[in-house]
Amino acid sequence: MTSTVMRISHRLANALCRAMKCRIERGTTASMDRYHARASKVVRGLAPDPLFILSPPRSFTSIVCAMLGEHPEMYGLPETGLFTVRTMKRWLNGPRHAGLLRCVAELFFGEQTEESIVLAGGWLRRRQSLSTVAVFDQIATRLAPCMVIEKTPAMVSRLDTLQHILEMYPHARFFYICRHPRGYGRSVMNHMLELAADRNAPPPRWLEHLRPGDMGDGGALVRARTRVDWPGRDPQWDWLRLHENILGFLKDVPADQQLAMRGEDLLVDPDHGLRTITTWLGLRSDDALIDAMKHPERGPYSFIGPANARFGTSRHFLRAPQLRPDRATPQSLDGPLEWRGDGAWFAPEIRRLAQTFGYT
Image 1 (cartoon, rainbow, N blue to C red):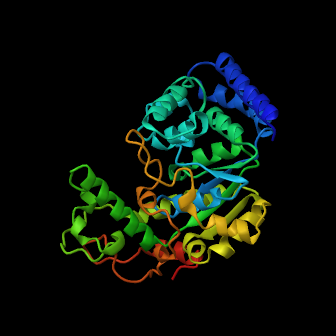
Image 2 (spheres, one colour):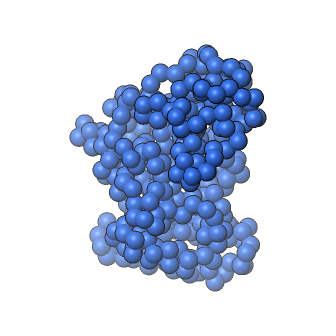
Image 3 (cartoon, helix red, strand yellow):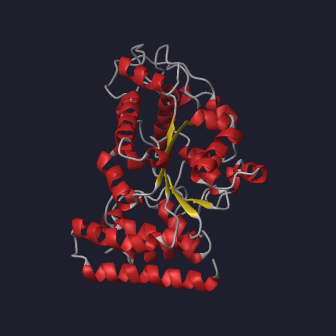
């Protein structure tokens, strides 16, 4: 795309946003959606339909997004959180800003420094009267002709959020990643314990029978040394609920717009997995491109950011962003769960769903 066409595209996107700001009733989400449904027909002509990665958290989404983003026809975003709320005003009042701040700083101010993060914050505040979809479209237009990849795991926590995405982008693609429930549970536990340690605070009560000393090499949890009564929170149920949300949503998505894959398979055999994804998307998949995609550490967000926006995606990935097949070590559905103190195994419904994904 020539620089002249890009300038015209940016002006058109900005004009659409100004029109939305003037014509939408303040505070009325439904009216924002109705206007955006009309305006986005023009925006979609300026940028390819996006790719949404659907998965519970702690399920390889950060490394997969970074790998896909190394394809010259795609661009992987950090966790923007844009689709977890409908309006920028609500987004600005939310808790997690680093991903979108880093994205705006990189795309609109050319770097990720403390100064550019401050400028990015102002850029976003000036758009607080817009819908979050309108801001996403500005980012997608900026990146045209690349396909934008959105991977915020919180999108899958509500079925109506997923349905809203499909309503706004009826031709979008959806890449569904699953992870073994034991690997998911261990990763959630490690993350919660690390957050508690960073904040010099006790871990959540549902993890109180564990402590950081129970973590082995690479952060993997090992058997808890302290046995206490189970406090009632178990990550296997989050795994089940989030996957049920995704599966329920995908029933309404045309078959050619969705692809499912086990994250472990992609990490162990990236050549086959990446070629499957690019072929599904209708993109080039020659050997040189596949090799480039096996270097997620080269991505624009594959490092810890400035002090005022350090993360914006998995901190574990940012500390070691290289492709490491050993992260996909085999797991079993049998045996006691390491995060419980009562010796319980996976519940029958967890086992049944995991087995449909091919886990044993």
